[in-house]
Image (cartoon, rainbow, N blue to C red):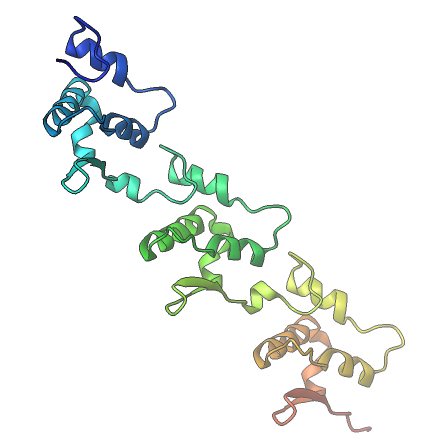
Length: 253
């Protein structure tokens, strides 16, 4: 009686190689799904026989290791292997993890650090907790120069990483991208010609609304260290009530 689409006097092996040889553009999954598709004319017995025949002829593909019989559907269903299961969203067939990370998650010229890390940490609906964390950790490892994990905190209630600004990542008010701290202090807080001592102190001790106690004190400390020859701390003190450094006019001798 033969198998579906088997030609007269065609041997079983010739039939299998003609119809079920793998196409150049077929992934493992597409190839095995094509083999496992069931013809309406097949009985359970002839269907299983055909699959067993194809698996035997193409034993190098290990077809039956990737298929499981579904009694409910009366057909073989494809089972992802451990290798397939760990694949990441948008990862191509047989694409190495590092190549995938470079292709999908290289930082764009239009992205600042925060936008880039938020994109990396965005979660796909298809990801499990484990696969999501594994993807983020992979990208962090491949692009170690961005210190991605230092800017992320995993929120259990959201089941995802959220971006957390740090003093270093945020920089100081008015600091330019990649500008060293001492260069920033000299550019913004050098005493100007004609600026009185009081006006100078009032200018650099003024607090930005965006500053926390910690980042405000860190900025003042940076300025003091950068201009250490001026002994700036001698004429100011920190006021706990206002949360500000206040200028103390030196006594006249």
